[in-house]
Image (cartoon, rainbow, N blue to C red; front, top):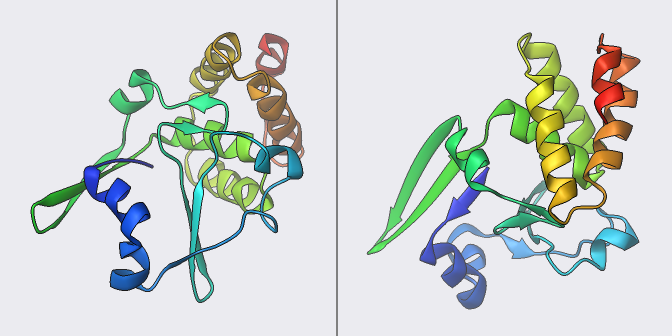
Length: 167
């Protein structure tokens, strides 16, 4: 999902997530690789008990949230607090699979597996097109990360050889 709002920016600067919802900022060290921790565009991470979520604004590391992704969103949820509104867009299953493939977290691979096992009509060509576009526009790891994820998936589900050939 991706978010757009002045409320979200305010939450980071004024610690509203902690005060209002009980979430606290946490470190990336136990979740992401050292290379991703060094990235300029990294998430804000929050925890409450056993729950954890990461908020990426405008990009996921080197990968940009582009207009095409925004147009493909699955659902929209608006949350209002006073005069501020937080809008959360739930991305398409294809965009979720792609973005989860580039974060390289084990839990994200489990999420990808859940999506592909529940959804029989995943548009793999769209995912590959996104990786190719991102690679041409600044994310040098997009293709390699997706290919690694697809190699792991092909041991569990059927994936056409042509998908690998395109990468």
